[in-house]
Amino acid sequence: MSDSGKQIKASDLLVKALENEGVEYVFGVPGEENLDFLESLRTSNIRLILTRHEQAAGFMAATYGRLTGKAGVCLATLGPGATNLVTAAAYAQLGAMPMLMITGQKPIKASKQGRFQIIDVVALMRPITKFAKQIVNGNTIPSLVREAFRLAEQERPGAVLLELPEDIAAEMAEDGPLMTANMPRRPVCDDSAIDNAAAMIRAAKHPLLLVGAGANRKRIIDALESFVGKTGIPYFNTQMGKGVIGGFHDLYIGTAALSEGDYVHCAVDRADLIINGGHDVVEKPPFFMEHGGQTVIHVNFSPAAVDEVYFPQLELIGDVASSFQRLADRLEPEPGHDFDYFMRVRGEVLKHIAEGTDDPRFPLIPQRIVADVRAVMPPDGIIALDNGTYKIWFARNYLTKQSNTVLLDNALATMGAGLPSAMMVAMLHPDRRVMAICGDGGFMMNSQEMETAVRLGLDLVVLIIRDDSYGMIRWKQAHLDFPDWGLDFGNPDFVKYAMSYGASGHRVEATEEFLPILERCYEAGGVHLVEVPVDYSENKRVLIDELAERVCLI
Image (cartoon, rainbow, N blue to C red; front, side, top):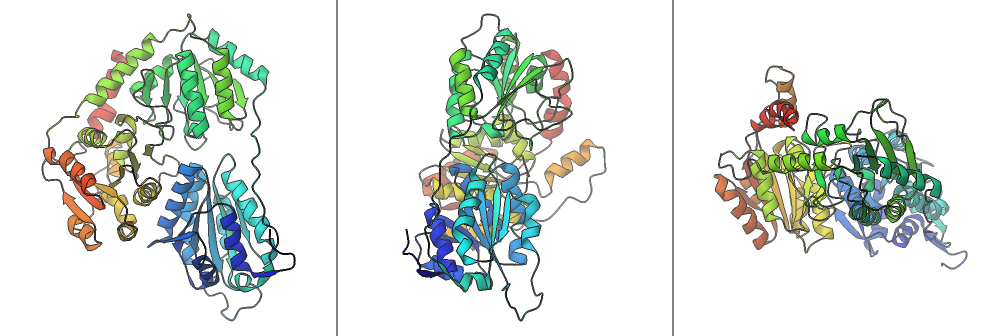
Protein backbone atom coordinates (compact mmCIF):
# COMPACT_ATOMS: atom_id res chain seq x y z
CA MET A 1 0.00 0.00 0.00
CA SER A 2 1.45 3.37 -1.04
CA ASP A 3 1.11 6.73 0.70
CA SER A 4 -2.06 8.59 -0.31
CA GLY A 5 -1.40 11.42 -2.76
CA LYS A 6 2.16 10.37 -3.55
CA GLN A 7 3.20 10.79 -7.19
CA ILE A 8 5.20 8.24 -9.16
CA LYS A 9 6.29 8.03 -12.78
CA ALA A 10 3.82 5.94 -14.78
CA SER A 11 6.51 3.55 -16.02
CA ASP A 12 7.59 2.96 -12.41
CA LEU A 13 3.98 2.27 -11.50
CA LEU A 14 3.71 -0.25 -14.35
CA VAL A 15 6.79 -2.10 -13.13
CA LYS A 16 5.44 -2.10 -9.57
CA ALA A 17 2.19 -3.56 -10.85
CA LEU A 18 4.12 -6.30 -12.68
CA GLU A 19 6.10 -7.05 -9.53
CA ASN A 20 2.81 -7.25 -7.65
CA GLU A 21 1.70 -9.95 -10.10
CA GLY A 22 4.81 -12.00 -9.35
CA VAL A 23 6.46 -11.40 -12.73
CA GLU A 24 9.96 -12.91 -12.86
CA TYR A 25 11.05 -12.08 -16.42
CA VAL A 26 10.36 -9.66 -19.22
CA PHE A 27 11.47 -11.00 -22.61
CA GLY A 28 11.97 -8.64 -25.47
CA VAL A 29 13.65 -6.10 -27.68
CA PRO A 30 13.18 -2.54 -26.33
CA GLY A 31 12.99 0.54 -28.55
CA GLU A 32 13.17 4.29 -28.13
CA GLU A 33 9.54 4.47 -27.04
CA ASN A 34 10.22 1.97 -24.21
CA LEU A 35 13.14 3.80 -22.61
CA ASP A 36 11.21 5.07 -19.57
CA PHE A 37 9.90 1.58 -18.96
CA LEU A 38 13.39 0.15 -19.47
CA GLU A 39 14.84 2.54 -16.90
CA SER A 40 12.10 1.59 -14.43
CA LEU A 41 12.85 -2.08 -15.06
CA ARG A 42 16.59 -1.51 -14.42
CA THR A 43 16.07 -1.10 -10.67
CA SER A 44 13.42 -3.81 -10.43
CA ASN A 45 13.79 -7.38 -9.24
CA ILE A 46 12.30 -8.46 -12.59
CA ARG A 47 14.94 -9.87 -14.91
CA LEU A 48 15.13 -8.52 -18.46
CA ILE A 49 15.86 -11.24 -21.03
CA LEU A 50 17.10 -9.48 -24.14
CA THR A 51 16.39 -11.53 -27.26
CA ARG A 52 17.49 -11.03 -30.86
CA HIS A 53 13.97 -10.90 -32.28
CA GLU A 54 10.58 -10.01 -30.79
CA GLN A 55 9.02 -13.21 -32.11
CA ALA A 56 11.41 -15.29 -30.00
CA ALA A 57 10.61 -13.13 -26.96
CA GLY A 58 6.93 -13.87 -27.47
CA PHE A 59 7.53 -17.60 -27.86
CA MET A 60 9.54 -17.62 -24.62
CA ALA A 61 6.86 -15.68 -22.75
CA ALA A 62 4.12 -17.98 -24.05
CA THR A 63 6.09 -21.09 -23.05
CA TYR A 64 6.62 -19.62 -19.57
CA GLY A 65 2.84 -19.27 -19.33
CA ARG A 66 2.27 -22.77 -20.66
CA LEU A 67 4.53 -24.37 -18.05
CA THR A 68 3.70 -22.21 -15.01
CA GLY A 69 0.09 -21.15 -15.54
CA LYS A 70 1.20 -17.55 -14.90
CA ALA A 71 1.25 -15.04 -17.73
CA GLY A 72 4.67 -14.60 -19.31
CA VAL A 73 5.54 -11.01 -20.22
CA CYS A 74 7.21 -9.80 -23.41
CA LEU A 75 8.21 -6.34 -24.61
CA ALA A 76 8.45 -4.64 -28.01
CA THR A 77 8.50 -1.13 -29.32
CA LEU A 78 5.97 0.39 -31.73
CA GLY A 79 5.54 -0.36 -35.43
CA PRO A 80 7.82 -3.18 -36.63
CA GLY A 81 8.60 -4.28 -33.08
CA ALA A 82 4.92 -4.75 -32.35
CA THR A 83 4.17 -6.43 -35.67
CA ASN A 84 6.97 -8.91 -34.97
CA LEU A 85 4.90 -10.09 -31.98
CA VAL A 86 1.86 -10.98 -34.08
CA THR A 87 2.87 -14.61 -34.70
CA ALA A 88 3.74 -15.11 -31.03
CA ALA A 89 0.40 -13.58 -30.02
CA ALA A 90 -1.46 -16.04 -32.25
CA TYR A 91 0.74 -18.87 -30.92
CA ALA A 92 -0.27 -18.07 -27.34
CA GLN A 93 -3.91 -17.39 -28.17
CA LEU A 94 -4.55 -20.55 -30.17
CA GLY A 95 -2.37 -22.67 -27.87
CA ALA A 96 -4.09 -21.40 -24.67
CA MET A 97 -0.88 -20.03 -23.16
CA PRO A 98 -1.21 -17.00 -20.84
CA MET A 99 0.95 -14.12 -22.08
CA LEU A 100 1.05 -10.32 -21.67
CA MET A 101 2.58 -8.18 -24.41
CA ILE A 102 3.72 -4.63 -23.60
CA THR A 103 4.35 -2.43 -26.62
CA GLY A 104 5.42 1.18 -26.99
CA GLN A 105 3.85 3.96 -29.02
CA LYS A 106 4.60 7.56 -30.04
CA PRO A 107 3.27 10.31 -27.74
CA ILE A 108 -0.51 10.55 -28.00
CA LYS A 109 -0.95 14.07 -26.61
CA ALA A 110 1.46 15.84 -28.94
CA SER A 111 3.98 14.61 -31.49
CA LYS A 112 6.34 16.20 -34.00
CA GLN A 113 6.90 13.05 -36.05
CA GLY A 114 3.62 12.81 -37.95
CA ARG A 115 2.69 9.20 -38.70
CA PHE A 116 6.27 7.88 -38.64
CA GLN A 117 6.19 4.19 -37.61
CA ILE A 118 2.65 4.53 -36.31
CA ILE A 119 0.14 1.77 -36.88
CA ASP A 120 -2.91 0.95 -34.78
CA VAL A 121 -1.34 -1.85 -32.76
CA VAL A 122 -4.36 -2.26 -30.49
CA ALA A 123 -6.67 -2.80 -33.47
CA LEU A 124 -4.10 -5.11 -35.07
CA MET A 125 -3.90 -7.32 -31.97
CA ARG A 126 -7.55 -7.31 -30.98
CA PRO A 127 -8.62 -10.27 -33.20
CA ILE A 128 -5.82 -12.51 -31.87
CA THR A 129 -5.92 -11.60 -28.16
CA LYS A 130 -8.36 -11.80 -25.28
CA PHE A 131 -7.78 -8.15 -24.37
CA ALA A 132 -5.96 -5.26 -26.06
CA LYS A 133 -5.83 -1.78 -24.55
CA GLN A 134 -3.86 1.44 -24.87
CA ILE A 135 -2.93 3.10 -21.57
CA VAL A 136 -4.07 6.72 -21.89
CA ASN A 137 -3.76 7.71 -18.23
CA GLY A 138 -1.10 6.52 -15.81
CA ASN A 139 -3.60 6.36 -12.96
CA THR A 140 -5.38 3.44 -14.68
CA ILE A 141 -2.28 1.23 -14.74
CA PRO A 142 -3.03 -0.82 -11.58
CA SER A 143 -6.52 -1.79 -12.72
CA LEU A 144 -5.48 -2.42 -16.34
CA VAL A 145 -2.59 -4.66 -15.32
CA ARG A 146 -4.78 -6.67 -12.95
CA GLU A 147 -7.45 -7.08 -15.62
CA ALA A 148 -4.88 -8.11 -18.22
CA PHE A 149 -3.44 -10.82 -15.98
CA ARG A 150 -6.88 -12.01 -14.90
CA LEU A 151 -8.02 -12.48 -18.48
CA ALA A 152 -4.73 -13.99 -19.69
CA GLU A 153 -4.74 -16.66 -16.98
CA GLN A 154 -8.43 -17.47 -16.76
CA GLU A 155 -9.70 -20.49 -18.69
CA ARG A 156 -9.30 -20.60 -21.63
CA PRO A 157 -5.84 -18.85 -21.21
CA GLY A 158 -4.40 -16.70 -23.97
CA ALA A 159 -2.67 -13.49 -25.04
CA VAL A 160 -3.35 -9.92 -23.89
CA LEU A 161 -1.80 -6.57 -24.87
CA LEU A 162 -1.11 -3.28 -23.09
CA GLU A 163 0.24 -0.40 -25.20
CA LEU A 164 2.18 2.25 -23.27
CA PRO A 165 2.68 5.50 -25.24
CA GLU A 166 5.95 7.35 -24.70
CA ASP A 167 4.41 10.44 -23.08
CA ILE A 168 2.14 8.43 -20.78
CA ALA A 169 5.14 6.39 -19.60
CA ALA A 170 6.96 9.60 -18.59
CA GLU A 171 4.06 11.36 -16.85
CA MET A 172 3.38 11.31 -13.14
CA ALA A 173 0.59 9.20 -11.72
CA GLU A 174 -0.99 8.51 -8.35
CA ASP A 175 0.95 5.90 -6.41
CA GLY A 176 -2.22 4.37 -5.06
CA PRO A 177 -2.92 0.85 -3.81
CA LEU A 178 -2.09 -1.96 -6.20
CA MET A 179 -4.76 -4.45 -7.13
CA THR A 180 -4.38 -7.85 -5.49
CA ALA A 181 -5.19 -11.03 -7.33
CA ASN A 182 -8.24 -12.86 -6.12
CA MET A 183 -8.30 -16.62 -6.46
CA PRO A 184 -11.86 -17.45 -7.45
CA ARG A 185 -12.99 -21.04 -7.30
CA ARG A 186 -14.04 -22.36 -10.65
CA PRO A 187 -17.70 -23.38 -10.84
CA VAL A 188 -18.28 -27.13 -10.70
CA CYS A 189 -20.61 -29.28 -12.72
CA ASP A 190 -23.93 -30.09 -11.03
CA ASP A 191 -24.48 -33.50 -9.48
CA SER A 192 -27.26 -34.55 -11.84
CA ALA A 193 -25.00 -34.20 -14.90
CA ILE A 194 -22.24 -36.18 -13.15
CA ASP A 195 -24.78 -38.88 -12.25
CA ASN A 196 -26.00 -39.04 -15.85
CA ALA A 197 -22.45 -39.36 -17.14
CA ALA A 198 -21.66 -42.13 -14.66
CA ALA A 199 -24.79 -44.01 -15.78
CA MET A 200 -23.80 -43.66 -19.44
CA ILE A 201 -20.31 -45.00 -18.69
CA ARG A 202 -21.74 -48.00 -16.82
CA ALA A 203 -24.16 -48.76 -19.66
CA ALA A 204 -21.54 -48.57 -22.42
CA LYS A 205 -19.80 -51.68 -23.68
CA HIS A 206 -16.70 -50.09 -25.23
CA PRO A 207 -16.08 -46.71 -23.50
CA LEU A 208 -12.90 -44.86 -24.45
CA LEU A 209 -11.28 -41.76 -22.91
CA LEU A 210 -9.86 -38.99 -25.10
CA VAL A 211 -7.40 -36.56 -23.47
CA GLY A 212 -7.27 -33.19 -25.26
CA ALA A 213 -5.26 -30.01 -24.97
CA GLY A 214 -7.51 -28.45 -22.33
CA ALA A 215 -6.77 -31.31 -19.93
CA ASN A 216 -3.09 -30.42 -19.70
CA ARG A 217 -3.32 -28.75 -16.28
CA LYS A 218 -1.73 -30.02 -13.06
CA ARG A 219 -4.92 -30.73 -11.08
CA ILE A 220 -6.57 -32.33 -14.11
CA ILE A 221 -3.62 -34.66 -14.60
CA ASP A 222 -4.06 -36.03 -11.08
CA ALA A 223 -7.81 -36.42 -11.53
CA LEU A 224 -7.45 -38.21 -14.87
CA GLU A 225 -4.95 -40.64 -13.40
CA SER A 226 -7.43 -41.34 -10.61
CA PHE A 227 -10.27 -41.83 -13.13
CA VAL A 228 -8.28 -44.25 -15.29
CA GLY A 229 -7.00 -46.15 -12.27
CA LYS A 230 -10.47 -46.48 -10.78
CA THR A 231 -12.38 -47.45 -13.94
CA GLY A 232 -9.78 -49.27 -16.05
CA ILE A 233 -11.02 -47.41 -19.15
CA PRO A 234 -8.36 -47.19 -21.91
CA TYR A 235 -7.39 -43.77 -23.23
CA PHE A 236 -5.73 -41.99 -26.12
CA ASN A 237 -4.78 -38.35 -26.68
CA THR A 238 -4.57 -35.60 -29.25
CA GLN A 239 -1.16 -34.17 -30.06
CA MET A 240 -1.53 -31.33 -27.57
CA GLY A 241 -2.93 -33.72 -24.98
CA LYS A 242 0.19 -35.85 -25.28
CA GLY A 243 1.82 -36.71 -21.99
CA VAL A 244 -1.05 -35.69 -19.71
CA ILE A 245 -1.10 -39.32 -18.61
CA GLY A 246 2.06 -41.30 -19.23
CA GLY A 247 2.57 -43.14 -22.50
CA PHE A 248 3.89 -46.26 -20.76
CA HIS A 249 0.61 -46.90 -18.93
CA ASP A 250 -0.95 -50.30 -19.67
CA LEU A 251 -4.19 -48.61 -20.77
CA TYR A 252 -2.60 -46.10 -23.14
CA ILE A 253 -3.57 -46.74 -26.77
CA GLY A 254 -1.63 -43.94 -28.46
CA THR A 255 -1.65 -40.46 -29.97
CA ALA A 256 -4.05 -39.42 -32.69
CA ALA A 257 -1.30 -37.84 -34.78
CA LEU A 258 -2.97 -38.24 -38.17
CA SER A 259 -6.42 -37.26 -39.36
CA GLU A 260 -7.45 -40.77 -40.35
CA GLY A 261 -6.21 -44.24 -41.16
CA ASP A 262 -3.94 -44.75 -38.14
CA TYR A 263 -4.35 -47.57 -35.63
CA VAL A 264 -5.76 -45.26 -32.96
CA HIS A 265 -8.69 -44.50 -35.23
CA CYS A 266 -9.58 -48.19 -35.31
CA ALA A 267 -10.21 -48.00 -31.57
CA VAL A 268 -12.20 -44.79 -31.99
CA ASP A 269 -14.40 -46.44 -34.61
CA ARG A 270 -15.11 -49.41 -32.31
CA ALA A 271 -15.93 -47.27 -29.24
CA ASP A 272 -19.61 -46.76 -28.42
CA LEU A 273 -18.90 -44.01 -25.87
CA ILE A 274 -16.12 -41.42 -25.97
CA ILE A 275 -15.40 -39.43 -22.81
CA ASN A 276 -13.75 -36.31 -24.22
CA GLY A 277 -11.66 -34.61 -21.56
CA GLY A 278 -10.45 -31.10 -22.44
CA HIS A 279 -11.49 -30.97 -26.08
CA ASP A 280 -10.11 -27.72 -27.51
CA VAL A 281 -11.58 -26.23 -30.65
CA VAL A 282 -8.10 -25.59 -32.10
CA GLU A 283 -7.69 -29.34 -32.52
CA LYS A 284 -10.42 -30.93 -34.57
CA PRO A 285 -11.72 -34.01 -32.81
CA PRO A 286 -9.84 -37.10 -34.00
CA PHE A 287 -13.11 -38.71 -34.98
CA PHE A 288 -15.99 -37.66 -37.18
CA MET A 289 -19.32 -37.91 -35.46
CA GLU A 290 -22.35 -39.12 -37.33
CA HIS A 291 -25.91 -39.29 -36.11
CA GLY A 292 -26.43 -42.76 -34.74
CA GLY A 293 -22.69 -43.19 -34.17
CA GLN A 294 -20.66 -42.82 -31.00
CA THR A 295 -22.12 -41.16 -27.95
CA VAL A 296 -19.84 -38.41 -26.63
CA ILE A 297 -19.53 -36.91 -23.16
CA HIS A 298 -17.86 -33.48 -23.31
CA VAL A 299 -15.91 -32.64 -20.13
CA ASN A 300 -14.51 -29.12 -20.13
CA PHE A 301 -14.54 -25.67 -18.56
CA SER A 302 -16.87 -24.36 -21.25
CA PRO A 303 -19.60 -25.77 -23.52
CA ALA A 304 -18.69 -27.44 -26.79
CA ALA A 305 -18.44 -25.17 -29.80
CA VAL A 306 -21.07 -25.85 -32.42
CA ASP A 307 -19.57 -28.00 -35.16
CA GLU A 308 -21.00 -30.29 -37.81
CA VAL A 309 -18.72 -33.16 -36.74
CA TYR A 310 -18.78 -32.60 -32.98
CA PHE A 311 -22.09 -32.55 -31.14
CA PRO A 312 -21.72 -34.22 -27.72
CA GLN A 313 -24.86 -35.77 -26.23
CA LEU A 314 -23.89 -34.80 -22.67
CA GLU A 315 -21.73 -31.94 -21.46
CA LEU A 316 -20.07 -31.72 -18.03
CA ILE A 317 -19.32 -28.01 -17.77
CA GLY A 318 -17.18 -26.76 -14.90
CA ASP A 319 -13.87 -27.49 -13.25
CA VAL A 320 -12.49 -30.43 -15.24
CA ALA A 321 -10.47 -31.90 -12.39
CA SER A 322 -13.55 -31.89 -10.15
CA SER A 323 -15.69 -33.53 -12.85
CA PHE A 324 -13.29 -36.42 -13.38
CA GLN A 325 -12.65 -36.93 -9.69
CA ARG A 326 -16.38 -37.02 -8.93
CA LEU A 327 -16.89 -39.44 -11.80
CA ALA A 328 -14.15 -41.66 -10.38
CA ASP A 329 -15.85 -41.59 -6.97
CA ARG A 330 -19.07 -42.91 -8.56
CA LEU A 331 -17.53 -45.65 -10.68
CA GLU A 332 -15.90 -49.05 -10.28
CA PRO A 333 -14.56 -51.45 -12.94
CA GLU A 334 -17.66 -52.48 -14.86
CA PRO A 335 -18.09 -56.22 -15.64
CA GLY A 336 -19.98 -55.34 -18.83
CA HIS A 337 -17.10 -53.35 -20.30
CA ASP A 338 -15.17 -55.05 -23.08
CA PHE A 339 -11.74 -53.64 -23.86
CA ASP A 340 -10.28 -56.63 -25.70
CA TYR A 341 -10.29 -54.89 -29.09
CA PHE A 342 -8.70 -51.75 -27.63
CA MET A 343 -5.90 -53.85 -26.18
CA ARG A 344 -5.33 -55.46 -29.58
CA VAL A 345 -5.05 -51.98 -31.07
CA ARG A 346 -2.60 -51.04 -28.32
CA GLY A 347 -0.49 -54.08 -29.21
CA GLU A 348 -0.42 -53.08 -32.87
CA VAL A 349 0.52 -49.50 -31.94
CA LEU A 350 3.42 -50.66 -29.76
CA LYS A 351 4.61 -53.07 -32.45
CA HIS A 352 4.49 -50.30 -35.02
CA ILE A 353 6.39 -47.91 -32.75
CA ALA A 354 9.10 -50.53 -32.28
CA GLU A 355 9.70 -50.84 -36.02
CA GLY A 356 12.85 -49.11 -37.20
CA THR A 357 14.15 -48.23 -33.75
CA ASP A 358 17.44 -50.04 -34.46
CA ASP A 359 17.50 -49.47 -38.23
CA PRO A 360 21.15 -48.96 -39.29
CA ARG A 361 20.44 -46.95 -42.46
CA PHE A 362 22.15 -43.63 -43.01
CA PRO A 363 20.81 -40.96 -43.28
CA LEU A 364 18.73 -41.90 -40.27
CA ILE A 365 15.08 -42.77 -40.68
CA PRO A 366 12.65 -40.91 -38.38
CA GLN A 367 11.89 -43.96 -36.23
CA ARG A 368 15.59 -44.32 -35.32
CA ILE A 369 15.87 -40.62 -34.51
CA VAL A 370 12.86 -40.78 -32.17
CA ALA A 371 14.13 -43.97 -30.49
CA ASP A 372 17.62 -42.59 -29.83
CA VAL A 373 16.24 -39.32 -28.46
CA ARG A 374 13.92 -41.29 -26.17
CA ALA A 375 16.89 -43.36 -25.01
CA VAL A 376 18.99 -40.34 -24.06
CA MET A 377 16.20 -38.47 -22.27
CA PRO A 378 15.44 -39.43 -18.64
CA PRO A 379 11.82 -39.65 -17.44
CA ASP A 380 11.78 -35.93 -16.57
CA GLY A 381 13.68 -34.80 -19.69
CA ILE A 382 11.77 -32.30 -21.85
CA ILE A 383 11.71 -32.04 -25.62
CA ALA A 384 10.38 -28.91 -27.37
CA LEU A 385 9.36 -29.55 -30.96
CA ASP A 386 9.32 -27.08 -33.80
CA ASN A 387 6.98 -27.84 -36.72
CA GLY A 388 7.68 -30.26 -39.53
CA THR A 389 7.17 -33.88 -40.55
CA TYR A 390 9.29 -35.04 -37.60
CA LYS A 391 6.63 -33.60 -35.26
CA ILE A 392 4.18 -36.28 -36.43
CA TRP A 393 6.79 -38.99 -35.84
CA PHE A 394 7.53 -37.76 -32.32
CA ALA A 395 3.82 -37.32 -31.56
CA ARG A 396 3.17 -40.93 -32.55
CA ASN A 397 6.34 -42.77 -31.49
CA TYR A 398 7.77 -40.90 -28.49
CA LEU A 399 6.25 -42.36 -25.32
CA THR A 400 6.16 -40.01 -22.35
CA LYS A 401 6.98 -41.00 -18.79
CA GLN A 402 5.93 -37.77 -17.05
CA SER A 403 3.49 -35.00 -17.86
CA ASN A 404 4.60 -31.88 -19.72
CA THR A 405 7.76 -33.49 -21.07
CA VAL A 406 6.74 -33.08 -24.72
CA LEU A 407 6.00 -29.53 -25.84
CA LEU A 408 4.53 -29.35 -29.31
CA ASP A 409 2.22 -26.90 -31.01
CA ASN A 410 -0.73 -28.32 -32.90
CA ALA A 411 -2.77 -25.11 -32.69
CA LEU A 412 -1.07 -22.37 -34.70
CA ALA A 413 1.59 -24.97 -35.64
CA THR A 414 4.11 -22.27 -36.45
CA MET A 415 7.70 -22.83 -37.46
CA GLY A 416 10.43 -21.07 -35.52
CA ALA A 417 9.09 -21.69 -32.01
CA GLY A 418 11.11 -24.79 -31.10
CA LEU A 419 14.38 -23.14 -30.08
CA PRO A 420 12.89 -20.24 -28.03
CA SER A 421 10.48 -22.63 -26.31
CA ALA A 422 13.33 -24.97 -25.33
CA MET A 423 15.34 -22.01 -24.06
CA MET A 424 12.50 -21.10 -21.73
CA VAL A 425 12.28 -24.69 -20.52
CA ALA A 426 16.02 -24.71 -19.80
CA MET A 427 15.66 -21.51 -17.77
CA LEU A 428 12.82 -22.93 -15.69
CA HIS A 429 14.36 -26.40 -15.27
CA PRO A 430 18.16 -26.06 -15.23
CA ASP A 431 18.47 -29.45 -13.50
CA ARG A 432 16.71 -31.38 -16.28
CA ARG A 433 17.78 -32.48 -19.75
CA VAL A 434 16.19 -30.23 -22.36
CA MET A 435 16.25 -30.62 -26.14
CA ALA A 436 14.98 -28.38 -28.94
CA ILE A 437 14.03 -30.49 -31.94
CA CYS A 438 13.88 -28.50 -35.17
CA GLY A 439 13.94 -29.00 -38.89
CA ASP A 440 16.57 -27.05 -40.78
CA GLY A 441 13.82 -24.76 -42.14
CA GLY A 442 12.23 -23.95 -38.78
CA PHE A 443 15.56 -23.59 -36.99
CA MET A 444 16.78 -20.92 -39.39
CA MET A 445 13.69 -18.82 -38.73
CA ASN A 446 14.94 -17.98 -35.21
CA SER A 447 18.47 -19.41 -35.24
CA GLN A 448 19.89 -16.07 -34.07
CA GLU A 449 18.63 -16.96 -30.59
CA MET A 450 21.57 -19.35 -30.27
CA GLU A 451 23.47 -16.25 -29.14
CA THR A 452 20.82 -15.59 -26.51
CA ALA A 453 21.04 -19.17 -25.25
CA VAL A 454 24.83 -18.94 -24.96
CA ARG A 455 24.66 -15.53 -23.27
CA LEU A 456 22.17 -16.89 -20.72
CA GLY A 457 24.49 -19.81 -19.93
CA LEU A 458 21.85 -22.43 -20.65
CA ASP A 459 22.33 -26.19 -20.74
CA LEU A 460 20.58 -27.12 -23.96
CA VAL A 461 20.87 -29.49 -26.90
CA VAL A 462 19.51 -28.20 -30.21
CA LEU A 463 18.82 -31.06 -32.61
CA ILE A 464 18.64 -30.06 -36.28
CA ILE A 465 16.93 -32.67 -38.46
CA ARG A 466 18.30 -31.84 -41.89
CA ASP A 467 16.69 -32.57 -45.25
CA ASP A 468 17.54 -29.31 -47.09
CA SER A 469 13.89 -28.61 -47.91
CA TYR A 470 10.51 -27.78 -46.45
CA GLY A 471 9.88 -31.46 -45.85
CA MET A 472 6.30 -31.38 -44.57
CA ILE A 473 5.13 -29.46 -47.63
CA ARG A 474 7.17 -31.75 -49.92
CA TRP A 475 5.47 -34.79 -48.36
CA LYS A 476 2.00 -33.32 -48.98
CA GLN A 477 3.07 -32.25 -52.47
CA ALA A 478 4.03 -35.84 -53.30
CA HIS A 479 0.84 -37.19 -51.72
CA LEU A 480 -1.15 -35.00 -54.12
CA ASP A 481 0.92 -36.34 -57.06
CA PHE A 482 2.26 -32.87 -57.84
CA PRO A 483 5.78 -32.53 -59.28
CA ASP A 484 8.60 -32.14 -56.73
CA TRP A 485 9.23 -28.41 -57.16
CA GLY A 486 9.90 -25.20 -55.29
CA LEU A 487 10.79 -26.49 -51.83
CA ASP A 488 14.59 -27.03 -51.80
CA PHE A 489 17.03 -24.63 -50.12
CA GLY A 490 20.65 -24.45 -49.05
CA ASN A 491 21.97 -24.48 -45.50
CA PRO A 492 24.98 -23.07 -43.70
CA ASP A 493 27.64 -25.27 -42.18
CA PHE A 494 25.69 -25.85 -38.97
CA VAL A 495 28.76 -26.87 -36.97
CA LYS A 496 30.60 -23.65 -37.81
CA TYR A 497 27.38 -21.70 -37.40
CA ALA A 498 26.98 -22.96 -33.81
CA MET A 499 30.62 -22.26 -33.04
CA SER A 500 30.30 -18.70 -34.32
CA TYR A 501 27.83 -18.06 -31.49
CA GLY A 502 30.06 -19.69 -28.89
CA ALA A 503 28.10 -22.95 -28.84
CA SER A 504 29.43 -26.41 -29.64
CA GLY A 505 28.58 -27.97 -33.01
CA HIS A 506 28.35 -31.64 -33.91
CA ARG A 507 27.56 -33.42 -37.17
CA VAL A 508 26.29 -37.00 -37.19
CA GLU A 509 28.10 -38.87 -39.99
CA ALA A 510 27.11 -42.44 -39.12
CA THR A 511 23.94 -43.81 -37.53
CA GLU A 512 25.75 -45.41 -34.62
CA GLU A 513 27.29 -42.03 -33.70
CA PHE A 514 23.98 -40.32 -33.00
CA LEU A 515 23.14 -41.56 -29.51
CA PRO A 516 26.73 -41.28 -28.15
CA ILE A 517 26.99 -37.69 -29.45
CA LEU A 518 23.78 -36.73 -27.65
CA GLU A 519 25.01 -38.32 -24.44
CA ARG A 520 28.35 -36.49 -24.62
CA CYS A 521 26.56 -33.18 -25.14
CA TYR A 522 24.56 -33.57 -21.95
CA GLU A 523 27.60 -34.71 -19.99
CA ALA A 524 29.55 -31.64 -21.13
CA GLY A 525 26.81 -29.08 -20.40
CA GLY A 526 26.35 -25.79 -22.21
CA VAL A 527 24.69 -25.14 -25.57
CA HIS A 528 25.18 -27.81 -28.24
CA LEU A 529 23.88 -28.03 -31.80
CA VAL A 530 23.64 -31.52 -33.30
CA GLU A 531 22.98 -31.85 -37.03
CA VAL A 532 21.50 -35.18 -38.13
CA PRO A 533 20.50 -35.97 -41.74
CA VAL A 534 17.12 -37.64 -42.19
CA ASP A 535 15.73 -40.05 -44.76
CA TYR A 536 12.04 -39.22 -45.10
CA SER A 537 11.30 -42.01 -47.58
CA GLU A 538 9.51 -43.77 -44.71
CA ASN A 539 6.82 -41.08 -44.61
CA LYS A 540 4.76 -42.44 -47.47
CA ARG A 541 5.35 -46.12 -46.74
CA VAL A 542 4.50 -46.00 -43.06
CA LEU A 543 2.16 -43.03 -42.71
CA ILE A 544 0.11 -43.63 -45.84
CA ASP A 545 0.47 -46.86 -47.81
CA GLU A 546 0.70 -49.57 -45.17
CA LEU A 547 -1.77 -48.15 -42.67
CA ALA A 548 -4.84 -48.71 -44.80
CA GLU A 549 -3.88 -52.34 -45.25
CA ARG A 550 -2.90 -52.87 -41.63
CA VAL A 551 -6.11 -51.39 -40.30
CA CYS A 552 -8.03 -54.10 -42.15
CA LEU A 553 -5.91 -56.80 -40.46
CA ILE A 554 -6.92 -55.89 -36.92
